[in-house]
Image (tube, rainbow, N blue to C red; front, side, top):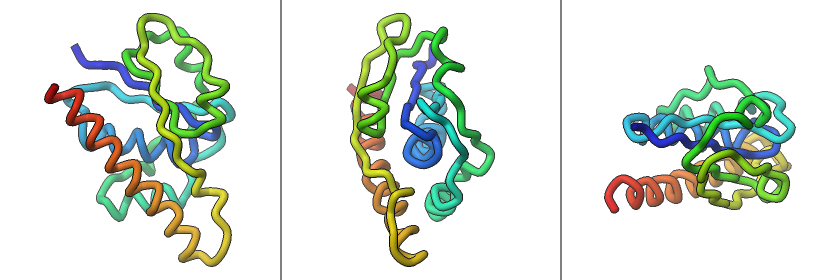
Amino acid sequence: MKKQVLILCTGNSARSQMAEGFFHAFADDWCDTFSAGTHPSHVHPLAIAAMAEKHIDISGQRSKSLTEYLAKPFDFVITVCDKAAETCPMFPGSAVRIHWSFPDPAQAGGSDEEKIQAFRNVRNDMEAIITHWLAQQTNP
């Protein structure tokens, strides 16, 4: 049976969306992955662009509220921003809670190039952590 993974962030617009994209690309055979936000908004265009550079299409994903998943049991609940880690509710079952702190790339200022670079930096850090974590889970 596939593991059930929920990735949480505040807006479910960038970090959790990118993480969901990586999980779908790297581990769809091992887990079903969902993402949600404590205050969902929309999928950020620069998150879509940054992931497209890795040939991962998240343009069809949508921003979702964590309330959509409160009744669903998860094996892992992963928060990718500090605010979500602080406000994350308890989930039914024996979900393992994991926190990976990533800066919010949507808060980056500067030129268009500096803004997309902020998304690339978070994307690259996230890819490294997710790849390492998945290797530990699937090849213990």
